[in-house]
Image 1 (cartoon, rainbow, N blue to C red):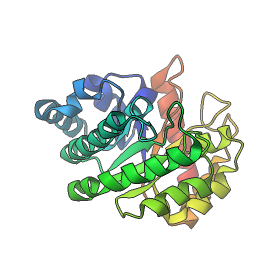
Image 2 (image 1 turned 45 degrees about the horizontal axis):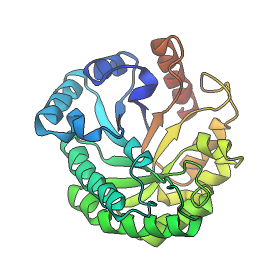
Image 3 (image 1 turned 90 degrees about the vertical axis):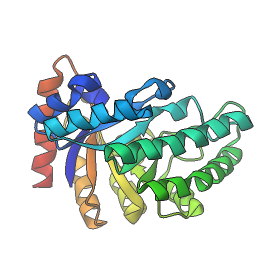
Image 4 (image 1 turned 180 degrees about the vertical axis):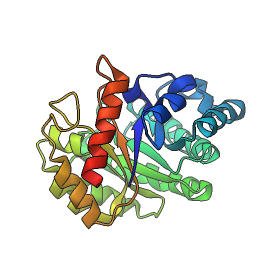
Length: 259
């Protein structure tokens, strides 16, 4: 497994993110885009060129892209125009990710006002089915994440969504911290998702640093080994008042578990 960090956990703008991550010993970074995604460097060729150059100079991989934008544009929406925008974001993000060498995209499974759990679930399956071919064509994988929605919280629910979408370019983005937030056992969660896991976020709710919170991280890593996961572990941890010290401490903690 490789260790990376989402940009927000290192507290750096993209211009200095890659060098900062390299200094702390990370192998890769995850770039996050929100509702203003189209204004970011990821959404234009020149900007992607800059990002690739910065990553190359630092010797850091852009391992993934986190589409926070789905909190604003959800496939669960009753508005056809919003769902169309969600689909456009996915297709454009797949092409952008491929261009900067990112193999995975995090897509949070969000809900929308007025949508029942059954409606939201059906719309997500339909929406992801419609965009999965774009991921496949770009050579990337969409990974749907458990973010506490009533129709997509448990391992069985996330596994059910992945299985219903039924496309090799759609997997699960496992977050053991989110499982703990939902009152679930993250070790059992990882084992239930099994081979559906495409990438993993690592945080430890209840503590500033890994090992200080409520997640059985050693158990999670053991479960990931058992299900033959060998991808990226991406830190999504607090920056604290000293992002460099926190980042390095968290990386070292994960390295000890992996050893």
